[in-house]
Length: 487
Image (cartoon, rainbow, N blue to C red; front, top):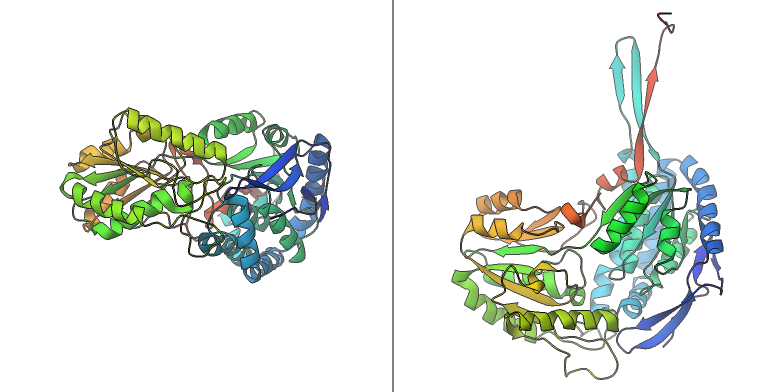
């Protein structure tokens, strides 16, 4: 099984290689097999990519918004035509089951290109301000060269979520995917050229921990958009701030799901499972602290246990498979260490907790795991695990559970399940998070803003709001008469 691209980088409309860069091995998580070898960008590659983007951005920004929109909509059309091919590549890149990637990964990227391609002709209009005889007007203008730094859980989606609003607004992008999942973004860059984007408007370079700082500190970069962990976000935001660059930070979370005793219990269980087990638990917005009212706790746990143990774990390329492996051996080991901490600190293991017997070979599989009787001070209730580990906590009082749900440095997401809509809206008003759901969880259509608060980041992705983070306001005062001075 091989997925070797033509070269490691895509710059100025073509594949580029520099074998002096550190070797990056792309490993298929279901088998542990090396399916591609690439090279991290050297300083020369980084300079080439940024110079190409800087040149192309001036041409691209001169196009009308409608013309840029046509390119993005064409890219969306191509992605949908090649959804199967792109989904299979995403499965090889991440280990996520094809059942999932074919509906959630390239398609969401295509949605992003289509959405921003459709709204850009009117979404960046300015305003006219009457000032008596004089007047003023405002306009939104692109920032210039934008750096996107992706995470490994949704590599194609993130490449598009960052690229679509950046390009729609008239910027050029240099995108660095995670070294764990280096393959999909190269195809996105190819498709944009095929759709008619000028060469250099969207460049992809590979990299490791040394590459990001070189991109962030480059003087020709106007903005950095990162999806990653909180510690990484602090470093990148600090480096960008030292040069007063624009930043968008989409970071991690330890999000709460609050389930009241009047909730539809099967719907609540579905929401909790989507918020913990989808993508093998590797989703930043996951609701990994599930607060369940004591009155329904036992029923909730019994049904949850049965449904969790029925999840089909296996070959990600089999369309019947519902859960694939973790993205890497290191990530699985990290999650297993958290499971050991949960046991040691006194949480009750309801199900899972180890490596499934149903799969063989060298893949990075893990059982979906549920802990009950979790308390707020336990490590598994405080730290982001980023794996399929659900922590169920008890509560009885609304005010108490809101206070406990907010007692975290994170603020990415939250969910509420209840039949009482007055209570639902009251509770979400008090929960400290950027993206919230009522009676559902983890749905992120491109039409709505997505992003966090507190240590989970700032700025928004998706929706028209994203364009504000990829452009800046220019104000023009128009004097209609003679200019006078008092001296």
